[in-house]
Length: 579
Image (cartoon, rainbow, N blue to C red; front, side, top):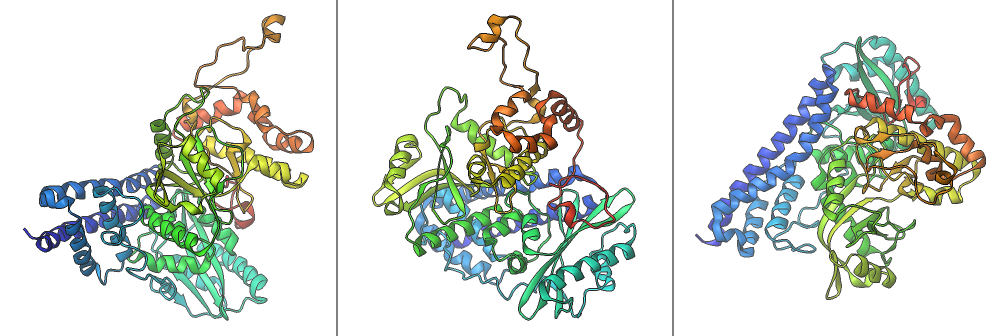
């Protein structure tokens, strides 16, 4: 069989595999609406995990099918170059062609493990120019109104077709309209607008459904998002988010993935980018569960950034890690983490165990407190773009992963995550008021993670960071475990003066033992800053709190985590935890 004939046959297999994968993705996504309506929160969580695991299985099956179909030709670059041309013709006109491109690239990366990008067999950014501007209304409905009143809000809420009645739709609609009028007046000077646009798909995550829209006036935009809860006695609008910062937190890199059934992802991404211009396109795709394509967008953005600037990679700010070597570009918003070749005796772990922990956490609800990392393999960067001190360090401590290849630095495996200010550095440079807010936030982060069945292990402040919104998140996963696997203990009283004065511990400590009293040492602050922490979080120093949360989590209780504060909630709401 000639290379062209083999390519045409294989393309049918790849195209069918992609269509099956994408339909499975949408089938799981569509279930979220029903699960929300019947208040089956565990099912939404399970579906998020199941959907996240689809891609690897689909790619693996496609690789096996191609090997059986093509035989030795499956390893021919000539055949794959022909396949790329045939596949391009096949996906022309698709409204999800960017996802189809990424699916093809995922296959080539497995068949031909290679550093960087090979444009003969890989899709690159200029193969299909993908403008997002101008597409944003294709999946949205425009309400040609001059003011956002209760009647308009009621129509929007009813149009979603949720099969559950509202507790009091008139009350909620009026409350939302009042809040929106206030927000528009603050931004535009009056509540007058040119139009209100609302995305047709409803976004569902955990226990909330989100209606996402925007108000337009003279070229300016105000995001408008309504969060709807389904309580035992019906639906209720819980919160209104009406500025970029509030909506940005909804799509935070420390949050889990939305379920929104999309005919054309790029249309919705265009709308989201119009209200969140500071968010990378990659982050928006990832927030909707399109992780692989988000990685592709991120890589293209990174390469474009490197080409467009003269900055050099350097050691990231903060205390050096015992497990990871971390570097960044001075003005870039992300950090790069490479697992070291060896660890000190205090770290009883392995490279495989660390990678397992990262993979496991990507399947967990991050409750706004865990940095989302994307895993990359076989990437290359120009050697001249590395600070010499950094390059020497990487070759010394991570030589199994980082190597030199001519004028390039080849990295076999790395994690990329959002850059934040290490909490210990932040506290060192903050004003007393800022430090008090930060340590209080740190305590809330510990509580949120515990309620999500996550125990950080090493609670040193150097392993936490502060986002641009002032939120404290956790980013060091090499000792993370489940809260249910911990044994919370009080430090035993010494039985003699000899034990009290001994340099070594007078009691035995197992790997699963945790002593909350030691939290004071991890905090490492004093005076008014420590007082601020104690006022809200003194119970974190005792075992009773941790055992109580452990019991709640062990019983299967799902605690509420919403990405907005009480300030964004409507006055009819009841008190719940915000995450």
